[in-house]
Length: 156
Figure 1 (cartoon, rainbow, N blue to C red):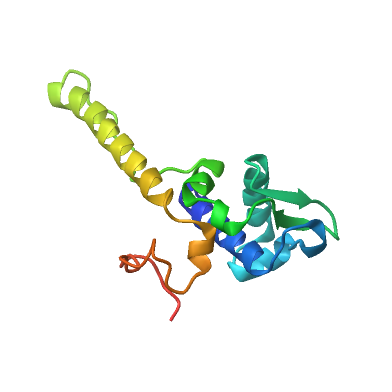
Figure 2 (figure 1 turned 90 degrees about the vertical axis):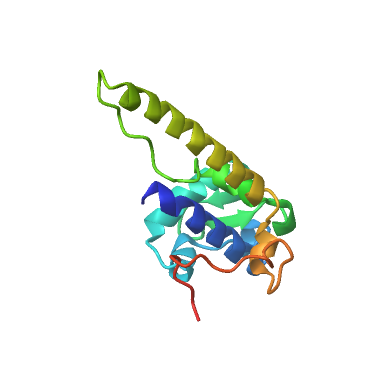
């Protein structure tokens, strides 16, 4: 799975667990169930849920009767935490290597890296005001001023 897909998959999985009221092992959702909801492969789900479990957002149990469940309420899980949990960033690319001996090529990658850091910081700040509960809400105030991004497919 590409780095750029871990965050959306993680956010979707957490929202699904919250929707299902999966707050203990008896309500755990199997990776195949989560994968069908997203849709993706159960292996992808297991990789993402391992990261979410390591971050303390969910618990998991392996095996045929296994699955994942939330350790915290959805209103207490900020999307910035989710992004950190899956080692994500704003994914605006990375600066190319500069050509040796060219003063612009030696300077610009460092400056672009600083700009990317600024964008990543801004993304984390914006995401800190949005929770998993907001994703489930029909008209969450934290999302009210935003339309879906033009390049993102949106279910009708």
